[in-house]
Structures are given as structure tokens and as C-alpha cells.
Image 1 (cartoon, rainbow, N blue to C red):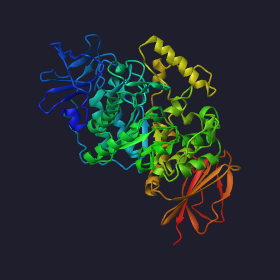
Image 2: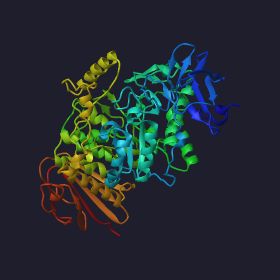
Image 3: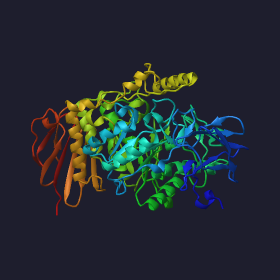
Image 4: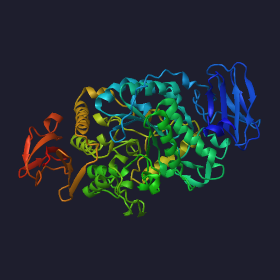
Length: 616
């Protein structure tokens, strides 16, 4: 029995064995002959042996360190390794042998936070630091740990064309982007993050590959003609010869956990993953990840991005679901964003009332089978019974800023008081919060859409497609050219802003919210009483726990409002008031205690947190 069959694992790519030899494995079922072309000083062409499953394999004992190589198919063209670990010369160049086992890890005692206790911080490696690399991000880890976030979420780092890209045009799922520093830089980054007490999440794309440098189809039927995604050909997860295709992507997920000690994978746009087979690829992937976690002795998590509002993603297998631990909830963003900006174009068309946000806080998402005017059909089903810790929420992320014509962050759309209100709703919510890089200090730079493709026709296609996509929001101005390097440079963060107000104070406010969230155990499930008002756009959340009650009052009106604290017994203590002058707000002094019959005066676009001991 072959090694592949015996272990049910497919050691794709170039892997160093215990005896020092290198083993190469590639799936190419439709090719009669596959040769390994080693581009070292001896420039060798080595025949590979095919097994009955269409895998071609060879072991090489004497190979030079960091040698480059390609695969020659049927004595014709040569291509990089589909499971390449490193593409030093980009998507069209040869692959480089990389010994990932030689790195000295120091995180043997690392224990990642539970998902419910997590606070994610999404960042784009290229624009986060001045160097635009993984090594350039490491010096910022201490300040992120001090902020209180638990998990750094990296936007995709799989090799993409050129040096500038969001990452969703990746074409080598196993290779770490060369302009970010390559594979060893990622190992250094993860090791350093764990040393600072920070988990690492990685955004991976299993619904498509990018358009440039995508040679995967030359090796086998990796793509399906039965489905189309908005981004290109769908992956063949359920058609003829889909078994090795499924294995390729499952092995990729396990690869990140094993070789790079990644803690969480964020699965991009799973609504673009099509599988009508007996076991959905996501259910199989979750099962494999769970088994790996048991073998490694640590918790490993998958978090899905989905716009389906489909509970089966989160429901366990015995209830017909995929059993994924969590998913993003776009409805939280939609409902919060429209309350503050009054934008109702595109996918914001279905939102705009306090009631929408209240429903999301109660259930996890809004659409549960109602008619969606944006989609012009009914949408979603009920998430009833699913714990709130299964939902990741955010006021903004890379999509919600970058998919605007001018890439405006929320800091460019609302005033300072509204930014604090947004932070409160997000970080004091019963869900798993996610922050987008720079929001904690009100970064004013946009986050624009940028690329660095090398093919002229593709560049024009992307530019025109971008214009058409933005038109549904009523943004008819010509967006910045994605290929222009200034588009990328203008999206870079300016960390020096933290030295001046109001950025410094906003960052302190985020720090205090995270501290309060943790001290008050807001991640734990509790009985919530949520009430909303539309005439006065007020949302209140009463959180009942064993020994303490917390009352959150959020005012979305731009005007000052008067209201009773609550028709409840006892005295309430003020824990936090966003409009206080301490946080550069307009109010100097707020009652430290509030009685049930006292009238509260809340400044426009502000919130207050009150507490009292629960009745015995």
C-alpha cells in the first residue's frame, strides 16, 4: 500500500524527509509523462513515477539548498509546482525548495484563546507597516497586545501577481507572498505573535483562484464548468475526479495549522463554494481540522465568510449542518452603518432602522426568510438556538471600506462622537468583535482597491469591472486606478497619528472598552432584554447575570435626548459614558449614580453603560 493510501494524507509539493532527501509529489491525472526539472547547477530533468491515482512522485537525494524547480508536462511546457511553498520570482517563475522544518519554534507552551473570548484585528500586510512586510508588522505586535485584541487576522498572503494586491487574486495557495517576505517570514511572524500572547488567523480563498498565473488547470480538472463565481471559475468539489481536488484544499488548510502554527482560518466567501455531493467539502474540512486539533492538542478554528444567512453552516452534523465554529455576520455591519450614515444604496437598501440592529443583536442576523429588496427575493433562514459566540461582527472591514469608490473608512463618513458610538455597539455586543486595522485610532487614510497585474488586457478588464461593480451604489465617479502605485501608497496606515489627539484618545477609548468587555465577561452567554425605539432612535440592552446587571443605552440621534434610565428598582452606577470630556466628548460631568426615576440626558450619538447589583 502506498504512503498516500496508508496515511490518507497527500504530501503535495516538495517535502524534506527524515533522511534528508526531498520528495516531490504532484497530481496530474491527464498527463502521460511528468518530469521534475531541477534548475540547480546540474540542471537535471528527472522522470517522475505515476501511481494509480494520477499522482506523480520522485525522491531526490542530492539537491542543492534553495534550488528552483518546475514540472514539465508531456515533454511540452513547464510550470511551477501547484503546491509551491515559495515563488521568489512571482507567479510565472519557478518554485523554490523551502525547508519549513528547520525553523526554531519557541511557542511550545502557547495556548490560543477560545473563540468566544476572541477579539479579532484584521490587517493587510502590505499597507499596515511602512515596510509592507510580515517582518515590518512584528514591531507593532506589542501595541496590539496592549490594545487588548487577542487575534491578528491576516488578509490573504498566498502568492498573487506583482507586489500589490488585496490577496484574493492568489494562485499558489501553499506559497507565502514573496513581497511580504516569503514562508520563513510568516513563521517568524506567528512565533513572535504567540510570544506576545496573540493568536494568528489567516484568510484563505477556496472558492476560486486569481486570473493571472493560474496554471492549476494544466495539471488536472481542478475547476468546474457547472458553476460560476463572480471572480472566475468555481473549484471542482463535486464533479468527476473531484476527490484529489478536495484533498488538495483540505491539505492546504492542515498545512497552515501544522507548518505555520496558525490558530484560525477565515474561509473567504463560502457562498462561492459549490458542492452538491453527499458530504459537503466544508463539513469534511471541519472534521479534518477537528481531528488535527486533537492530534496536536490545541484548538483550531474555522470562521466562514458567508452572505447566505444559512444556519446549516453553523449547525452540527447531527442536525444536518457543516458544524463550523463561527461565521461573519454582515447584517450587523449593514444595520449599524445605515443608522449612522443614512446610506441606502446597494446592499444597504434593506436596512436603516433601530429595529434591524435590535434583531441582529437578538438572533445573529436580520434576514431569516423575509423579502430582500436588494436581492429581490426572500433571503436567509432562522439562526434560532445558535449561540451568539458563533457570530463575528464588525462595524467595518476590508470589503466595506475597499468596495467604496473612494475607499472611505468610517472615520471619513461620521464624526468623532459617532466613531465612539460604533466602537461601543461593536465591542460591547454579545458577539465576537472584529476591528479593521487603524479603526481604533480613527485612521483617515482610505483603504482602496489596488492590484499590480502584468497583463494589459487583464488590467483593463479589472478597471472596467470595478467601475461597473461600484455603479450599483450610485458611485459613478471614476475610482482611482487600481494599478497606480499611488493608489496603494495612499492606503498605507500612519501610526504616528497615535501621538496626537483625537487619535490618541480614541485609541485609549477602544482600550477601555476592551478592558471593560473582558472584566464584565461580556463574551459569556447571558439573558439579554433588548428594546428599541424608532421615534427616538434609541437601543437599550439589559444584560442579566447572577450577581450584576448591566444596562447599555445607545442614542443614534444626532440630537440630545432625555429619557428615564430604566423603570427598575435600585440605584445604578455609571460605568462608562462616551460623551464624557475624558473622551473628548461635549459633556463635562455625568451623574455617577442614577435612580430608577431619574431623567438621563444623553448627548447626540452617544452611549452610556450603567450597572447595579442583581436582586437576590
